[in-house]
Length: 441
Image (tube, rainbow, N blue to C red; front, side):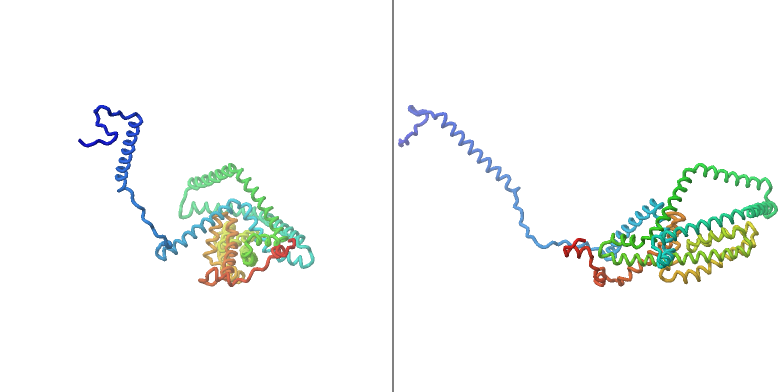
C-alpha cells in the first residue's frame, strides 16, 4: 500500500476530520466564481459575432456642388422669384395707397399744382418778396381764381338752364312723336308705359340715394379734408420745397444719395414739363370746343369749356368724353344735324391735340407710348377711380423719366460692380470729418 500524504485520510476511515463551515463557504464561493466566469465567457462568445469594428473614414474636401439643371431653368427660376417679390411689393404699395387715398392723392395733386405755379413763386421771390410770403400770395391768388371761375360758370349755367330745359322738353316731344309716327309705330299706351317705367326707375334711384345719405356725408367730409390737405401741402411745397427734398434725400443710404437727388430732380423736371404742357393742351381743347359751340349757338358754352378743360387732364380720352357733353347739349338744343357738326368739331380738336400739341409740347423727355397711357389710366381707375385716372399718366411719365435717367449710368450687360467703379467718389460728410478731427458737429 502506497503511503498517503499528510492530511489525506480516506473518507470513512477512522480518524478523518470533517470540513469546517468556513471551508465549505469558501468552496461554495469558488464554485460560484468559476460558474460566473464560465457564463461570462459563454456570453462573450455569443456576442462576439454581433460586434463589428467601425471602419475608419478618411476626411477630405467637400464634394457639394450646385444642382446641375439646364441653364434655361436656372435663369427662369431666378427671374420667377424676383418677379414674385416685385409683384408682392407692388401690390402692398397699391393697397397702402388705396387705404390712404384720402391723404395720398391730395398730396400728389398738390405736387402737380406746385410744379405748375412754382415759376410764379420764383419770380415774386426775385422781386424781393420773402419766399414764404410769395408762396402764400400765390396760393391765395389761386383760390381767388378758382372761386371766381366757379361763380362765373354757376351764373352761366343758371342763366341758360331755363332755355335748355325748354329745349329738353321740346326734344322729348319730338322723340315721342317719332316713336308714334316713325317706323316703330308704338301706341300711346306703350309710350306711357315706357315713361312710367322711367319715372319709377328715377324714383327708386332717389330712394337709394336717400338711404345712402350717411355715405354721401362721408364723401363730402373726405372732399373737404382733401381740399385742405391740397391747400396746405401746396403752400409748404412752394415755401419749403428744398428743405423737404433735402430731408427725403437724407433717408437714403449715403452711397445712394447722389443718384437719389439727381433722380428726384429729373422727376421734378419731368413733372413740371408734363403739367405745364397738359394745362396748355387742356386750354387749347377748351377754347377750340367753346368756339365751335359758340358758332353753332349751343347753350352753356362756358360750362362746356370748363368741363372740357378739366377733362383734358386725362390724356387721350378725357377731352373727348367731356366734349361728348357738348354734342349732347347740341343734340337737345338744335337737333341731330348740329350735333353731328359739333361732333366733327370735337374730333378735329382732338386730332390737332394728338398730332400737333402733344408731340410739340411734351417732347421726348416726358413721352409715354399711347399703350402705356391707356394702361396707366386703367390702373389708376382701378386703384382710385377718377382721381386715379387724373394722376396716373403724370406719375407714369415721371417714373419713365427716372428709369431712363438711372439706366444711363449702366451699359447693357455691365455688372453692378463695373458700374459702381465708374461712379465718382462720394463727397466727404462734414459731420464725419468733424468727429474724426475731434470737433463737435
